[in-house]
Amino acid sequence: MSVPMNNEGPGFVALPPVPEGAVMVTLKIRRFNPEDPGKAGWASFEVPCLPTDRLLNLLTYVKGYLDGTLTFRRSCAHGVCGSDAMVINGVNRLACKVLMRDMLNKDGKNTTVTIAPLKGLPVEKDLVVDMEPFFSAYRQIKPFLMTSGQEPTRERIQSQADRARYDDTTKCILCACCTESCPVYWADGSYFGPAAIVNAHRFIFDSRDEGAGERMDILNGIDGIWRCRTTFNCTDACPRGIKVTQAITEVKRALLFNRKAVVR
Image (cartoon, rainbow, N blue to C red; front, side):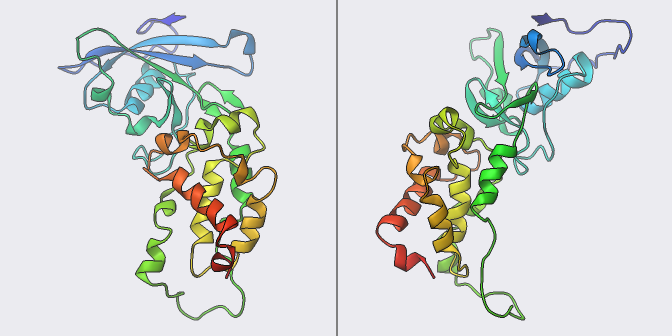
């Protein structure tokens, strides 16, 4: 289905002037309406684009001027909240971090960008998926500091070396790009997935935490860390550059060889 630039009539919104230097880009978006699931399919929109635009800008243009029914998540628009994760040209990415100059054809031909919802989670509408299975796995690994004894009157002191041990996995923004790129998770959603393991890693290797053993028992279960097949999809998909596969491997090694050193 191809959608024209705009139509006069009820709900008509005048299009803003096309900026100087803009080129027209085709956004091919996967549409789904739960009230009319039989009409699910692809819709194309012609959108003016500057090289400095982010893909999120183009989606906002579509929603604001071409089709107000288009549904997607966004919040901070700066790659911090993780809300606008979607499949862009077949790769899990954040729309706010995709710079259009990297997407435009260099030979001057028309550029088409395909956009679809994350794979592996139920689609609620258009590009919005139900994140509850993802966050359920996240909650199961107990992503909070676990300690015993009396609460300290000041902050818990930690050396720079101890902090650096798990620094990489503190960068996770729970966008689900890694988990929804995992073929094991696609095949069986009961697998915890990379994001849950990454966040378990963050606390397992925290010198202040006392729940490492409990978390590793959870990850040692049938739906836990051993389902990982080390395909590196998760590392490639992470918009924060986290070495996801390495973190998963470190937790595996802790379970196999160094359990006593990790459990505090």
